[in-house]
Amino acid sequence: MFGVTIFLFVLAFIIYERYSKLKITNLNGPKLIPLIGNGLEFLTNEDALYVLYRMVQKYGNIYRVWLCNDLYIIMTNPKDIEVLLNSYKHIMKAFSYKFVSSWLGNGLITSHGDTWRVHRKLLTPTFHFKILENSIEIIHRNVNILKNSLEREVGSGEFDIHSYIEKCSLDIIIETAMGIKMNVQTSNEAKSYLNAVKSVTNISVSRIFKVWLQPEFFYKMSNYSKIFDESLKQMEDVSKNVITSRRKELLEKTTPTPTSETKNKPFLDFLLTESNFTDDEIHSEVKSFMFAGHDTTTSAICFCIGQIAKHGDVQDKIYDEIIQIFPDGESYANIQNLNKLKYMENVIKETLRLYPTVPMIGRTILEDVVLPSGQKLPANSNINIFIYSIQRNPEIFENPDEFIPERFNDEKLKQYPYAFIPFSAGPRNCIGQRLAMMEIKMTLATLLRSYRLLATKSLHSSTISNDGN
Ligand code: HEM
Image (cartoon, rainbow, N blue to C red; front, top):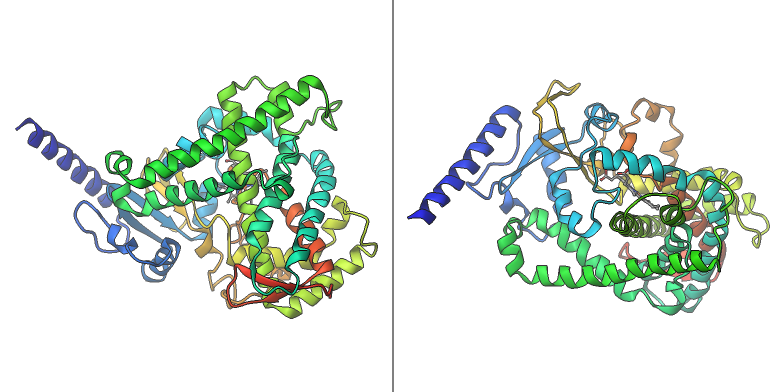
């Protein structure tokens, strides 16, 4: 009897909460089924991203989706988004980030309030352009290792370039931000880390859309929970090892920080020697930066490679620009000449427009907001900024599904600063975007100088020839 009463009480609460929110928001959206909401819409083989994208065509620039008792408000109007992203009031992440917080802890990606404010202020200088200048040699060396390892694939038909790029990106973030060499590319040391990242990210995203995995009770009974915990343990062993190694090196002063005399120290050196972060806080930040610093960049480089391989004319133009700006192939880049790679920059932007590696971001708003479109959002709403869809808006991007790098020369785009936001925007934008752009440019420049990328049927695989043009 007691159990039934509790059940009815919980049910009544869920129904009350759901319909009170529903009434206030008064948004369009797919038909609801009691208790599971729109969960069935995502029970398909199609990626959740495309299900949500089709809903934009049906329900417009702002609509709602219920997954069990959670209300997701999906937004794609750049003017509305500007109001939210541009404000220091709306810096709290959406509740869907709870699925990654057991993994990333209270690091910069997931924290909020004063913790986020203080950490962001302290960490921003660790990605200052002076630090980035020092990263160029590291990127150059690692990208050359990548180029040499790809030699074995020349002429051997289709292969998956992703596994090469991810190792290179991981080596780069660990050496630039953490100050240690892990030599993932040559030693295969972090293979289990990379596999673990894949499992943990897949399970975290699945938990949002597979509604039966949302309640802790059912999740804990599933195999997902076991895989997640084991993978997390593998990742934490690696990230703890990174901290211990650098701490030891700093104590022994075997590899001093290149800029130890200046106020700009690289990320982990700053955390270990200048900050008053606790060990837990340091570990959360290291986990967050190791993940954010290699996974997104890997995908971005792979998507660029896919597009360049598919569009031979684009590849020719980039090649000519590389030869013009770096006539001496052996010398490596500096920030000034990387900035001159204007056409390549347009190609990267166009790739990130069509294939943003972070397709959606979320916030919880803590007070009522009236959007420029007139829609009222009540406090505590979870809003989801659908970057993938915003960047394919046909009213802003003509022929939005076509790959046209030249569109970024059009002055008209400046009227819509929040229509192209692959690195998000405002105070919580991507802290590593300049490092990412440098790394993408240097990787593409080095590979395209030596190899011709050839398109295959799938985006994830490519063939290459030894012919540099
Ligand atoms: C092409 C590469 C990259 C893309 C597309 C990208 C995209 C983004 C986006 C969209 C956000 C906002 C996330 C949100 O609001 O939930 C973000 C935040 C963040 N990114 Fe990146 N990122 C890239 C590379 C990097 C790199 C190389 C680093 C590390 C150095 C990095 C570190 C971070 C961190 C720590 C945050 C959280 C910032 C905060 O909340 O204050 N990202 N990134």
